[in-house]
Image 1 (cartoon, one colour):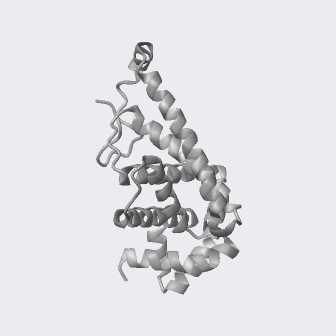
Image 2: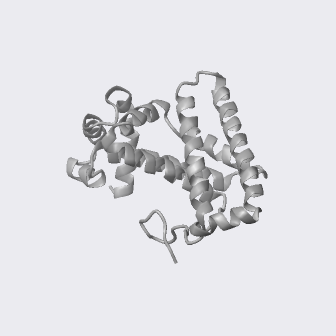
Length: 218
């Protein structure tokens, strides 16, 4: 069994255990046994155990969202495109698995991993939509979308409306608020005083290539 096949088999098997045991070592051991993956290989695939298992599930959801977006006829308005991709992302997720993941990443020792995972989702969305920003806007777009996505996930976890209709309305309100802010920011950016104030940040550039850094200078 190849490593990718084995990882997906363990992830699929884990979903039957997460609701009862959370993202835990117990779940990892049971899922590995169910999937027929040797303990040594499972440990190699998920070196930090349960937290890497949960992160692998999150990353797989991001990949499924991007794949679906690539085959879809997306709306023309950027706000609607973002909303569509967030909807794809949540529709690809198991709600109980996400609920248990939220509990795991709320722990202080894993909070950084959780924040990085949400940032990664925001980056995947903007990248899928062809974002070409190469300055401080690269960061502000992802920071803003991370906040919107995080809030929407929390709302979705408690939403029992038919087809999560209330969640999509909540998401639309959050995105409309962001768009109002972006329009205000654009007007502000055209002010000469604002341009002068932004000069100290002109050196900030988006990370490119395989740089494992939050940013770079040039």
